[in-house]
Image (cartoon, rainbow, N blue to C red; front, side, top):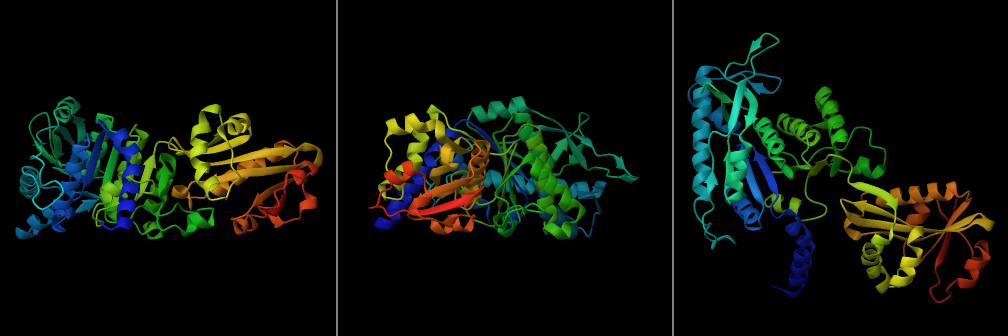
Amino acid sequence: MRPSQSVDFVSWFRAAAPWIHAFRGRTFVVAFGGEIVEAGQVESLTQDVNLLTSLGIRVVIVSGSRPQINAALAARGLSTESRDGLRITHPRAMDCVKEAVGRLRIEFEQRFSFGLPNTPMAQSEGVRLMSGSLITAQPVGVIDGTDFQFTGKVRDVDAETIHHALANGDIVFLTTIGYSATGEAFNLAMEDVAASVAVALDAEKLIFLIDAPGLPPLPGAKTKRARAQAISRELSAAEAERLFKAAAQSPEISGMSADTLRALDAAVRASKEGVARTHLIPRALDGALLMELFSYDGVGSMISEARLEILRDATIDDVGGVLMLIEPLEADGTLVRRGREKLEAEIGQFTVLEHDGVIAGCAALYPFAREGLAEMACFVVAPAFRGRNYGEELLARMESKARQMRIKRLFVLTTRTAHWFIEHGFVEGSLDELPEGKQRLYNFQRQSKIFLKKL
């Protein structure tokens, strides 16, 4: 490994440590369609799931089988119709469903029954894959005059048995066949099974591997950044529901496939019913599962019960987090150095932007009420969170606070980010425009540029 590669690896591993700690003992439901098998991705997915299990994460796999069912139908010269995204499963089609699901189950049992040669998991023992009649189903019935016959929906999940298996270190493998109380088998939608299981288990995460890079931006995105994004990285449950309704009414607007639309619908349901995080990630990207879980940006879209960003006034408990944020910029001279004691004394002037419990940005406001001016200082967004509009959100909060103080103009002193402030309405000023007290403290060695903005 070259020195540069070693540095990158160590940096990544250290950055992943908080997630490794946070995820231990948590339950993740990983759901995907039968396309994974057709694309020859079972081995890499098996390796990644094994790795999650070795880190103490409890994993439930839900596998769909639409392409395998279609192939089985074609081999027998049969076809089926669909209504509202659901297959109408007639008796002969149900035989094809059983055949396809059985083959799929064998495929995964074989993969998980031994350590993977020539892979990082080669020395691991075979992981036990547990499956069985864990889903109670009921028929969809007749809807708008259409009898869906052997197409069903989830009625109940045997959460107790699944929890017991996970506690024993097993990976639980679920298919899309469910059984009624009278012993009839029904063909279920993978998305329905995955969402129902995640809710029943109170899973930490529900993860769908989909046929797209992620979810498209919300209709009517307000900012340039949001409009330019290829995908939405993070959505609240309410935002995801709005996206689903817009896409369902006008599929051409979003360009989402039927598979992705079904996954989004299930993700919204799971989020509204208590699943903390639901992820939709590209199945075509090797290692997408690991990249999504163990990095800040991830590689797909995440839906949470509520927005992850919180703008709030800083407290004394935030001193450590703010120091970690600003110390690299103090070291390279971008910011004037502050000691812990000074920061503790001035923490009441700070606003922090918190992302999922991590301080991602901060800014301080120092008013000069007599002159109607206020200095915005220590304005920082962590590198991992840049490009998310966080700077704009912090600036808007500072401007709002300044207006409440009857401040007429904001000013900043900067040596590195003049262009950003100009883009956001600041104009270059001179030293004599600053309050007298600030003029006396001006550091001529730093030669900071002065920018002002009228409020």
